Amino acid sequence: MLNYIKSELYRAFHSKEIHETAIVLTVLVFLMNLILRLFSSMDHFRYGITSFSYSMLVAGPMIYCYGAGDVAVMLYEADNRNGTRGNSIACGISRIEIFAGKCIVSLLTSLGILLIVMPVYIASAVLLLPKEGPVEIKDLLLEIPAVSLVAAAALILAIVLLEVYDKVLVSILIWLGLLVFIPKALLLAGMYLSDQSAILLNIARWLPANFFSVEMQVTMSECITIWSTPEGMAKCVISGVLGILIFSIAGVLSLRKRDI
Image 1: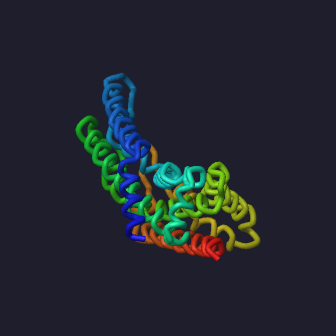
Image 2: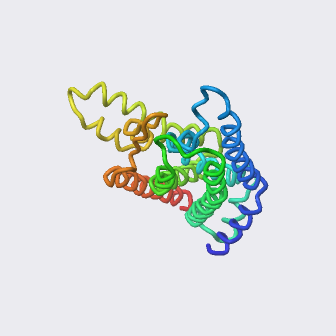
Image 3: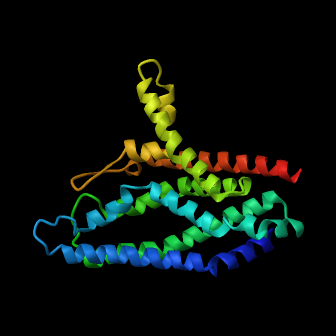
């Protein structure tokens, strides 16, 4: 399995798509801050400040989940088509070992992209924009540990679905359904039925897509993040850990049946 991980890491870090993604994201965040700087000289333009720049990420924590899922798709969506998985199985590597290896490689690749893009994001904002507004750099930095485990769970779910389903589109739709659409539906149903019982609403409030929106308020005048309190940070971490455990167990059980 170690040799498999090494070979996959080599492939990932020499992948043209991964290189292009890292470059494009780095250029985009720099250009965003540069454009904000250029437009800040215009009358009544309020957005040329660090607060607005940081809020682009702080207000949308699920962006990390989408990015992690995208890395998984870029690395492994072609496995069925190219027969890569079959070759690995023929070499004596089990499906569960392949699954674990893919999760590790995807997580390390996502971390690598983050370590490239984030310093450029922060440095360009600090150097180009005046330090004003409610959203501070600490809000952006604390978001990373708060969201990391949730994003890791989203990535593992993406790997599971890519392993189980042959069609990438099906995997993507189910992934979106489990992470976004179903949580939102549960929240609406819980709010509607709250007079009869609060159980469904309480469950819905523990789903990241919901607490990252309902329990946060990030605007030009205020910044309330869920991770700004110990209780909120704990909720993010616990939710992420539960997601990792649930999706990992689901992946192992479904792939073990295929090995049998």
